[in-house]
Length: 487
Image 1 (tube, rainbow, N blue to C red):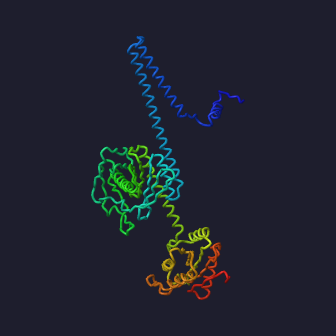
Image 2: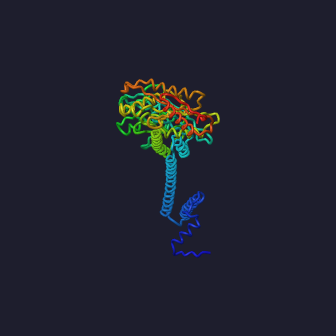
Image 3: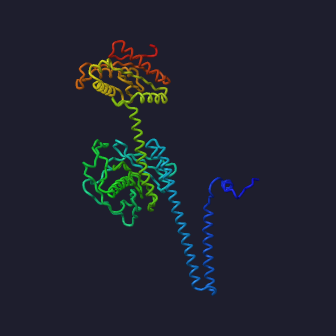
């Protein structure tokens, strides 16, 4: 048995941590309830003693009043402490939920992961039965809806809404939102953006101000080919700005109520600057009012979700730019090599692959004669000709300099040569007078076809390169196919 010296604080601390499992003392709900019960009994005994003493004539009225005042003071202090504890517990729970949400969002690398990160945490923390995320992707023409039920085992429902759902009913004059239905609860007070909707009414009476269409709209083509816009809320005042954002979020919530039969919704807009790009909508089956904590958490989650989605889309755009040739807008060599690796890992026994290697004839002489800017325009025209000549499932790419590659998926016998000849004749027939080139531009092509699924694509690419060199040696402006038997 080890000796414990009480005079050494560090020893006491180590002994205490050893006894309590290495952390501060933990109090269970039963011990807390027992403490409140004992305190209530003590107050009751104090009042009982005072009453019996007054009835028995041992104390006077002043002593009785003092005892009652003391009991009331202690009781009010206890109730206030308990209320403060409950409020602190709720605040801590809200902060923990928001912290978990931020942690999940920080790890999300795709839009789907962002949505998955927020819906379950929001549903659990706010007591919602359903969570819907409505968003418009950059350059998108529809609103994408991800609807999640909090019931165990429920699947995420994905659908779309027309982008015109984000358009206000009237864009040139101010209008007043409808008053809430009689008997409905108003939204929680405060500067939050969430709008609470019950029985088809929006919160409070708000005056919305919109800029003129010419000032407010950024042209976008919708799913029907019509010019629409991403709505922008007037910046006349922050109050009008928030009211307009909440109104459009409520408008989305109304559409979801009709589509999914929702009853009690709480919505917060997804804002990108002063543009509205969607909303997060919570719903309940009951008509109980939403708590201030739920409103705060939803508003905070909406802001962080917008930032997370913007980060993900920015990352995807950067990745796409890194895989795209900036001159021709075709995929570059990096993308082509990665795609070939992906195809190789998923090829089935019946899959066939062919490679076309395309090279511009005498391109250096063309550059020296007409200049590099004209040469760049010629490369763009050839890239367009290649893209127009291949099939939808084929993958053309600029492989480097004046060389292009095309991966053909499951071509039937003779198709690779047919597509190669189509590219050759399309390039040969191009009219480049507009860019200042009067000479005819031609290309040479090499075709390499795979014979079995396990054949490495790198070997097919190498075979297409050898066929290309053969086309160059035999006079250019032609298509040559190489086969393993010819090697």
